[in-house]
Image 1: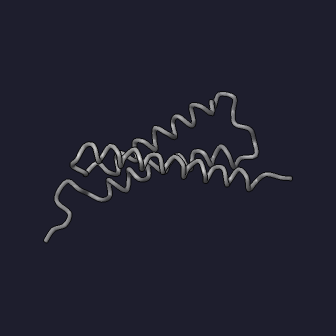
Image 2: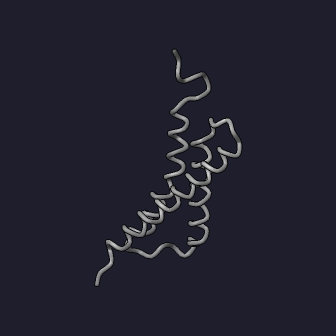
Image 3: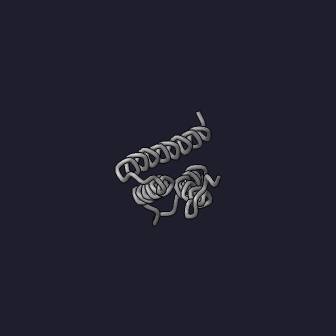
Length: 100
């Protein structure tokens, strides 16, 4: 019996998961460097970009769910979890470099 019908490749869901978690790496690049970010980098734009990546990854991970309302709710919940995870990791990294 085939549990994975055609069109439901788990590798695609894994790629969407990587899109959802990519902002963690972006935020860590800004937080962990000892140099201030360049003047052309707007922190609001970075957070907005990270939130959009989290949203795309969250909705993309649950794209195979047939019920549209359930897919939207789960996608938004997953995007929120990705965003909180990214921010918490970046904050822990930033706090670990603080000197008292």
